[in-house]
Each structure stands twice: as C-alpha cells, then as structure tokens.
Image 1 (cartoon, rainbow, N blue to C red):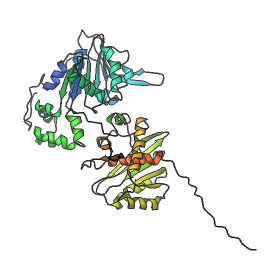
Image 2 (cartoon, helix red, strand yellow; image 1 turned 30 degrees about the vertical axis):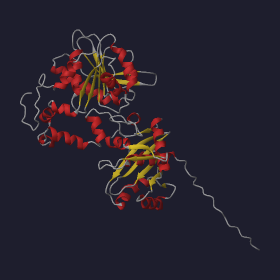
Image 3 (tube, rainbow, N blue to C red; image 1 turned 180 degrees about the horizontal axis):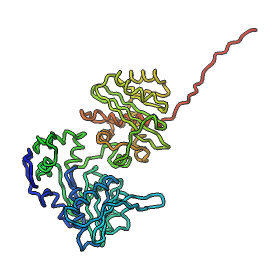
Image 4 (cartoon, helix red, strand yellow; image 1 turned 90 degrees about the horizontal axis):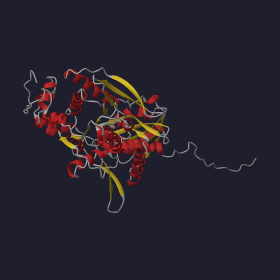
Length: 468
C-alpha cells in the first residue's frame, strides 16, 4: 500500500497485490469446486469475492456466466458495484451495470443487476429467491447464505448449476446451530467431507492477527476514535458494541448460537423481518387498525411500547419506543399520545408490580375497553408467548431486522419447573434489560388477537309497582 500512515495497529500485513489481506488472498486463489467461508462480519470477504468473480469471469477461456445470490436487491447492487470497480483495477473491458427483470411465474418476478464482458459472459447479481437459480449454468456465489429464508433449498437448486463448470462459493456468518449453513460446516470439518468442500474460517481475532486493523486504520478519518486503538482495544470495543455475548460470539467469532432453549429461533425471526431498505416505521395516524403493548419498567428494566398495524391477518410493526430510567410522568407524556390516536383499537399493559399504577391511570384516561391491564402469571405469559410464536410460524407478522430486537427475542427461554409447569424468562442484561421488547410485542399482539368484549353491557333495571 502506497503512502501508508503510521497507525496504532501493530500487525502490519504483507498485502497481496497491494490491497488483499492473507485470508482474503487464500479465499480468492482457492479454485475448489465448492468452497465455504465461515466468517466474522465486516472483514472484507464479500469485497474479495467480487474481485475473484471478475478475475475469473474475464478470462478468455470462461464460457459460462456467474450468478450471485445476495440477501436482497440492495446487497445485489452493491456486490456488482464492487465488481465494476475491480474491472477497472484489472484493466478489463466490462459493460456498465444494467438491470433485467426475470419472470419466475405469472405473479412473481425478480430484478437482476448485470455486467457483461468481452468474452460474451455476464455476471448476474440478484436477491436470494431460490427459483432464480433454477436452470442456470456457471459459477455460483451464495452470499450471506445462512441469512437466506431457506438455505437448504437455495443450495439444492444452485448446486446442479456447476455441473458443466464453474465454482460454488458459499459465504456467511452463522445464524444458529441448526441452520443448514452450520450443517455444511460440521460435515466438512467433522463428518467426512463427502461434498469435498474447501473450508475457510476467519473470526475477528483471526482477521486482527492478519492485519485487518492496520488496513482499517489506513481508511478511517483521522478523528475516528478507532484510530487510537490497538488490536486488543479494538477487539474489546467491538465486543462491547454487541447486544450480548452470544451475539458477539456468533457474529464475530464464528460460534453458532445454541438454540435448543430459545423460544423464537433465528429461522423464525429471519422469515418475518422487513427487507433491507424497507421502511417499517410509518406515521401512526396514517395506519389502519393499531394494537399496542406496553411492558412497564422503571430503573432496571426498560418500558417498551410496541405498536402493530393489523392489515387483514398480518401484523406489521410500525413503532417501538424504549424508555429507560424515565419517571412515570415522562412515560405518560411519551406514550399517551399513541393511546389517544383514533385508530388505536386496543392496548394491553403489563399491570404486574410497578405497572399497576400506570395501567390504572391509563384506564381512567382512555377507558377499560381501549386499555386492558394484564397481570403476568406464568399461564398468561405462556398464552401470550405461544400466540406470538404461532404468528411467527404462520408468517403473520413483520418486524424490523434490528440487532437489539433480535437479541431481545432470542433472550426469551422456555423452562419447565420441577412441578412440570412452563415458565418463560430472560437473562437481565445492562444492554437489553429483561426481554422487554419481546413482551411489548407479545402484549400488543395479544391485544389484537384476543376476542374483543362487546361495547354493549347488560343493565339490570329495578322496576317498582306504582299505584295510580
């Protein structure tokens, strides 16, 4: 790297071609038919993969196209933009990026971003619909593989495409022990490697040992706080930014989360999240029927207000307010305007312990039909939790793909007591609280799913005889 700055990082790497770290170069130069990258987040693997694809695609001997499967259209475009930059670095003649619509069925189509080469081959980059891989021949890149809606189906449809040549490159961080991505890794590492896959593993620590921070500090602005960090300090910094220790281990250290006791698994969560770039927040006054759940906290836990919009049978998350160390008067000032909306049909409030006063005052203000006080017994919590999970399983909810929401939902564990009773609990952490976002969502869904009482109440009249 020309004009290198003096930085705090101690591990200065020997860069291949002046830009690639050792682990990136090993990945680029691996020509195995199937190669798998088990990686930390944000260490430049997808970027290196785009160089690899351009390098191979531009060869005169290449006859087949390359097909890139990204998590969504935004990532698909970004991947091809990196490819375009590398075509300039390699002095390769390549077209500008274009768009093409592929019709998958009478009712479904998909947008692909494309770049063609002098050898008449094309790189096609698209989102992760497995059907888009059917019938295509040539190299496959399955980026963020574990995050796809159905990794096993995607793999099964994409694999036959390399029968006549090309390579299958699978790149991802983990998404739970039971995800098909982890099954592939376990088979390659410990199960005899029947697929003869070449396995790469790069954790955050591996990347730091091979010079990642040195390269990062060459790119960061001078005022960035990370410029003053060595490798150990940067490692601790990233760790402290994560929602919890399990998230850090999975996202950065290549350790898949154990979901044996997790109530909302990663597969369930990923299947109902909004896509990258989708706007989930919407002005509440412009929504249809609204249902809210408020889980009350004060000092240790957060008060969370989760608002769903119900459209048909589907509940869309439209708002999430998280209040910490807020006085009850402050909480009322923040949340009462939501409860006062004319399209707010019902709100369930945790009336256990310190929540009793908040719920009572809200009922006095808005009426007992609009506001219901819910007392958290094990039976009530189980009823709410199972109703919400059933909606996840039926794909009847849509929620934001937020790391704190994800970690909070994962923190909910189902336990069976010695007496055989089922109870739900979450570890209390400074970063997240005590499953507060999950219970806010569950209360809100309970408000919408619970049968509504009639507006009409029977009135018993006392009639007396009159003598005229």
